[in-house]
Length: 271
Image (tube, rainbow, N blue to C red; front, side, top):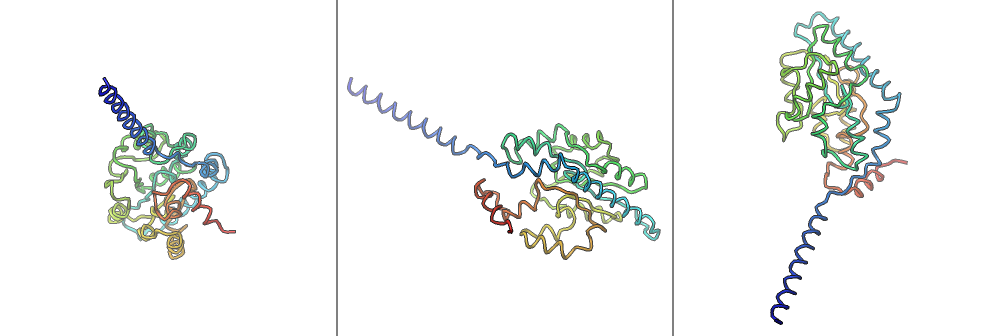
């Protein structure tokens, strides 16, 4: 009887330890809720400010003027093309950002289901300009780092919003999950077309020189070095919500805790 009680007690302790370890393991693996408060003003600015809309119109009005200027150059024999990024360049994904703020989640949580819903909304001026370019015989290429799994939903979203000539040749998704660079796709287009403009919200949308600049100082120096290209060949659209500019703040260390990221942001403020 004593042996039976002893065995029962040992069994109870063993089960308690296992349960405790499992709960502890689950707790340790639970993702840390994202500190999204720092993104609230940026997202509100995109969704609610007239200034944001003004900058979008400004970008596309400039694109229209630059294209018209290039079209007057009759010495160019190659067919013309315009290369545009998608997210925060021709359309906004701010509702995804807002959803994550409310749920205290961080990218890529929920990103694929959101894309599949084809919920992006056109930036002011984007549809009109790209249809104008197409009407002038200019081919529009949509070069995005969205993955192929979202191809159908992305094409549906673009077509529903009225963007022109969306097909397998003009919509270039991220073909290699391990490679973020768009350089190869841009060069493929450039080999067959005279690329009048590149439009994007991230420096990496324009030239591989920016891809190699991983620090804040390096990115700023690269912009200064390429300054003659901005407003003449490169057109940047506003995006304060996310991007490689934010990755550079954290020195591309994606393992930082929310507390460490907050401290890093504050340490970079200049007063």
